[in-house]
Amino acid sequence: MEKLAPDQVGALLRPGMKVAVLGGCNEPRGVAAALHAQPEATAGVEFTVTRIPGIASPTLAPWAGSTVRSFFVTPEMRAGFEAGSVRFVPMQYRHVWDDLVAAPFDLAIAQFTPPDGNGDCSLGIGAGFLPALLERTEIPFVAEWNRSLPRLPGAPTVPADRFEYVVETDVEPPTLASRSGPVAERIGALVAELIRDGDCIETGVGAIPGAVLAALHGHRDLGFHSGLLSDGVMDLVEAGAVTGARKTIDQGRLVAAMVLGSPRLYDWASCCDLIDLRTVDYTHDVRVIARLDDFVALNSAVEVDLFGQVNSEMVRGRQISGTGGAVDFMRGARMSAGGRSIVALEATAGGGRFSRIVPALPLAHAATALRTDADIFVTEYGVADVRGLDLVERARRLVRIAAPEFREELETHASQLCGQA
Image (cartoon, rainbow, N blue to C red; front, side, top):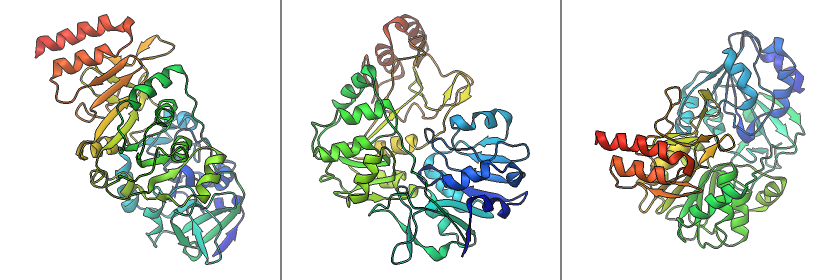
């Protein structure tokens, strides 16, 4: 094991190398910042990254001759994406794991806690994709040992001698805040009415998922199985709403791929023995989710068309995010006994100028989820339960939850669908 300073990692790189930089909560922020300051060291290198929108840090390769292969397009990657140095790969979260298991890499870089008394390093606040590469012993590892990374009781560990190179840093973990206004709160209240005591829930990040969690404090014996555990879940555990007592697998456990939120959340999670940080091939596998009875997938969207197709990643023809894990959870919910797939979104965008319920997805927009993936749609104007409905009635119900000023135009398009039926 060789110890390096952050600015010495660049000396390990050569043109033509393929380097995996495991992102999300495990993004090696100290090393990333050092590489960002050394564009000459990264020239000609292809980085594969697993970054998450909302966690900003320097992009690794915005320079000519270097490329980033990414499963999300985050705001700080925008310029590189438009210039062609960032290559977006659309892929469901579960399949990203398979990609990392098989893809050729010359080096991997990720963040861990320093070793404990037993010589084991913790993955900290996120299991996610990292073990997919740790198990590949042919890939040399640069470990950023971050003294400020929380060590969760339920996080996986790895022996310190797995690493060929070590960089010691002291960088505060990423934080993510969720703020919701009156519209999101209204949507949250409507979604909460669809949740039953004992259901097992999944949520993402953002104002609407946060508002849904805030509206569930009166529920009891909820279970939790998700990609991300946030402040809102912590609050529900403390309120006695989430216990996991009725989960058909992992009973009593909070299962997530990562913990992401406020410093208070990290302090709480560091002392909580109920959390199981699991890898994405478990949290996002439809076969696992299907074993959780009454599983409810709660996801948001950019827009939904009258067929029920969902776009969660593009705005005005521009990629703003990625495919992510929503479809994994939607399909798992459809396979769960008593499960439901709910998509919640505000009815308008652009200060009310644009309807998020649209006649059809624009030609330049991809469908993140098929029309067969979601059961229930919710806006601040109501709930559209489309289970078992024909094409015409599905469209009519979606029109009813659109903003009133757009309904006449949408009804015209819905009538055209009727004519085709």
